[in-house]
Length: 445
Image (cartoon, rainbow, N blue to C red):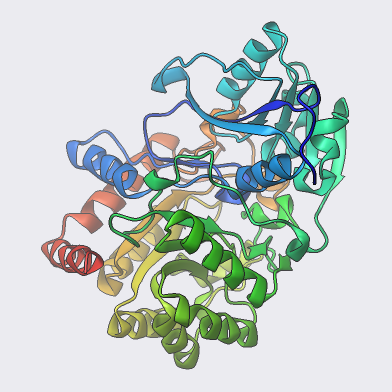
């Protein structure tokens, strides 16, 4: 596109709001976001701080919007605004402000939108929570976008439709431009010890999830689509060349649905000499795939284990991998030098304290590189939301670590105690500390 005349060129502000001191990721939990909060003990606080030091990533949606705005000829600036417990940053001066919505920072996002409106700045609110609960933002934003704002193209900036706007979903993800990170502090982005002294940047090769777990929001907030392996690796090459990225965090809810696609990705990534992380299903990993991915640069992988009680998971419409499959995958990954992060969930309606303790004990025997013990959260639109009675409706409570519904056998304070105990008891073991130190040292090599 040609250069716009000065009178038509806008200064567009892309705004992410943070109101928590703890590590906050906006693109996880289906875009509703999470806040890494373990507990109040000194060791729990240390774990929270450590997570913040090794994890900082932008939301891919903002990179896409920056690229589209620049293609349309506009000037783009990005802002991370601290509000609430995190600070009181002023709103920027701009011709148009686009605010990314979440659940975890929703009250502060509303506050920022109201401040922008008070100074006469046109505003657009995008993201998963705006799509799920547009009425929460419609009184303070000129435009609330339902769906994927990239699907509106340049009209999002130039025509600026008002009110609640249906954007739908991008049918062909390969038609999107590569995300633009020039206006972001990309040199500060990092994830999972992937790169030392060089940026780690996100890549979205898949949107949505092909499965239908009742507690997972990814099926609710987006439909399942995959990009072509060639287009994905072209983006990785672009990120390495333009921004000096040496680490890539694939933000795909399900990286390894299709083995043929995984092997092609591995083949194309191998000559690029980058390290990357990905989230996978353990029952779709085999030795051939994992060896190929390790050769291509896979250094960290997340797998959803959730619980050792597979009957409970089936009640939540999950088709869980078997315990044996998980153990085999973790053993194989360790042999290849791949760090495994095992994700667990506690506090589903059928869960009990003995089951939680059994799961934590098994996690210690499994001894992955890291664990996550989140608390079951009834996100908007999930079947879990339909099955429970909420005790808290304020969106900022939906951090992924906070009980928000009446549990048949576990009081909220007990779930919090179990959450903290699970993290602290796992990470304070001498066996774990030795293993973590070895992984950390190798990550700098």
